[in-house]
Image 1 (spheres, helix red, strand yellow):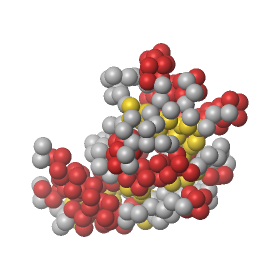
Image 2 (cartoon, helix red, strand yellow):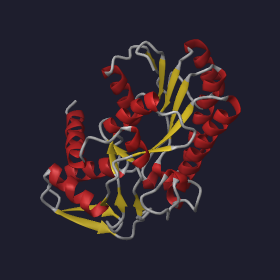
Image 3 (cartoon, helix red, strand yellow):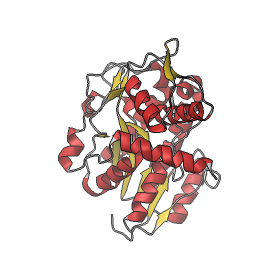
Image 4 (cartoon, rainbow, N blue to C red):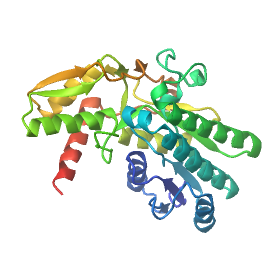
Length: 310
């Protein structure tokens, strides 16, 4: 992927796409193309076809997706399966039709079975039932993986599929109804601190364990894979480290400097018990995460505070 290559970033304003955009700009790539969802509705097949016909990108980072936390996934399963299926299908097919040299499709660790052995290896895909709360999103992502692999086999395309673990960082969604756990906790603890609340309520028992990757590390990994990975099989991106939601809540509490107590609402769902990725494959290629969780949460909190001051 030469510095003068024309590169399309689908979803450039989201958490992942914006990090990829920053990474490529920092590395001297100047021919980046992107559109907002208002300018280009990826659910519209003809609009996507017209975009590829006009721009003719050589490389594609497919980071556009409808994403959300456990509440959003559980509440709007039809939206999650429809929007993700149709967006990724249109982009992947257009990339094939217009001779894209390489496409990176971003999946998610939720593609793996609910009770997969830990840590989860790439070949654990489709070996068991999925977590019901985000099944629609997971099935859409699995379909995207299989579509890329099918096009590679039938047409000789170079479409690679990366599965990141739970992400957080600047430009995340901090909406309490639809956000992921890290931004939700940061906002909850910050508001409780400002309002001098005695307690902060966290969903579930606090026992499930999760792995978290700073989105800047993910962007670094995506750039690395575009340069060094050619395989038809999926590849995990993560830290290889996990902690409980209880430990995470305590870490966020310390970063925010909240002085009250944490209360766990055990009537709310926990989700998957563990979600740790096996990252031996990408580590062996020469990539490892660099940003520690506490440092990353500090950076994300500072970004959140800066946005509130606008």
